[in-house]
Amino acid sequence: MVLAAVGCGRSDNSSTPAAIVGSGSENNTADGGAVARQPASDPRHPVVLVDTSLGAIQVRLDAEKSPLTVSNFLSYVMASHYDKTIIHQVYKGQGVLAGGYDENMVERACRTAIYNEARNGLKNRRGTIAMVRQPGSIHSATSQFFINVADNPNLDFRDNTPEGYGYCVFGEVIEGMDVVDKINAAPLHDVERFERTPVQPIVVKTIQRIL
Image (cartoon, rainbow, N blue to C red; front, side, top):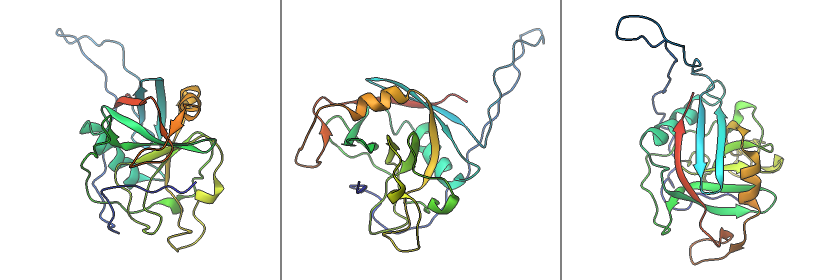
């Protein structure tokens, strides 16, 4: 599987966005009485819901080992960047790519490329989420991501060359892996811009942080 971010983010830039964190709190009624506490949000392991046209996927992010990448991803989530985008490429038995294009294959504008944290010790195993980047440029990931549907050790960090630096894993699916498998099994065709794109568009309706 050769993963390439097509479009924006081609420069090798190591700028680092500010961290985004959140926490749960106890809600109070108008008279000051406490109501049931919502589940506490762990700033090191926030959870997002990826709502697709084939079902929902919950992903726990790892800001402990991939702080810059998680911060970048959540910035796009908060900006509604992923709303009404598509799964634009599928590698059968390997992974599904998303985060860059709408249903008309129009590219979404993205920000400056981020530093690649692929040396964080996390592996591209089944169910993990990782960033797409240009194969020839280590620090070129922007908004596009992929979910592994199999163990892909060839995508892990091996050395400091562009070919061996790897693709940064920044979380894992905790619910809805059956949806990911359904996406991976979708009929594909080649179009002008992409090979292996779903015949029937698979839409990411929205991605929202839920914890």
